[in-house]
Length: 359
Image (cartoon, rainbow, N blue to C red; front, side, top):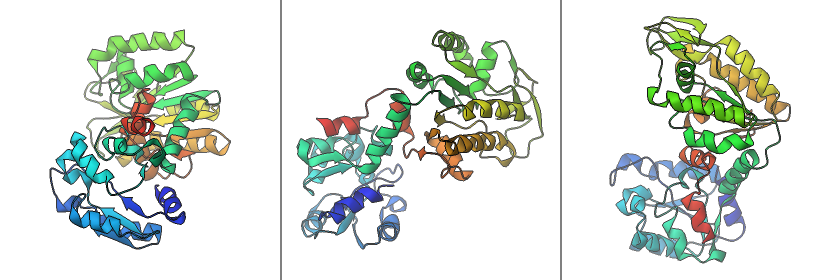
């Protein structure tokens, strides 16, 4: 996804030092070395890549100083250094000393105030730091939904817990027309209106808040859609016995694991009438083949609406994974590369990585 940024630098006479992280290693861990991706980076860019197994130190400095225009240096996983996640100034200053300019193209890490994503920017003046093409695109597509989305604007929120999406919902309510709630979140809403949810995931502590949220939606003229029927299982496994029932009448010993056909039909109607669509979270446990039909139906409707001219943005870890696994990633307008960063944008928060480029 960062290829256009890297190519722009190389094609305009620059040399490029690539820094990134992989996983969450505790100190140096060969399994998480960026040496594993070096060949793939070469293949993607069609150019040789020099790899150095450090981020700071004499070898890196010397290699960086000897880089010729058009050449690429890949340095080691920045998270091998504790100073990275601490946002350490001394470490960031050493990283900054390797280059003349700083380009942040890591949207997926822009919400982290780490050394390589935020602190390093303070060692470059305003003319020598900027966001890359990927980061710029991510900011644009979120603005396209939250600031200038063509009506009707639809948000589809799924996932397990309402508690993790409260700030997202609060922030997007003023700009959306319709809200579809799916996944585990839906069962807290059902409990709030007096339904029985059996063994389904349900946050009892948020039932009262859910009632308030329904009233807020009414007050702001936002139509809220919940599943009508759900596919339930007698166990949280792909091999569970399953049947379909009303979402308000899930028997004891059973749990809701997917949206049913009626629900998907109802949601599809809303999706096809929408001009701007934000999809954050699957409708069910799509990782299990027995409980992915709802998410597939949802993806098909979003793909069709996109084909008809709607703008569709898929963001958040699980929905991105679902879109890719089920083959919808090429049938929507944009798939975000950031999970946590995307959520924080939807919550209306400023991303430290972006703020650092402005100061």
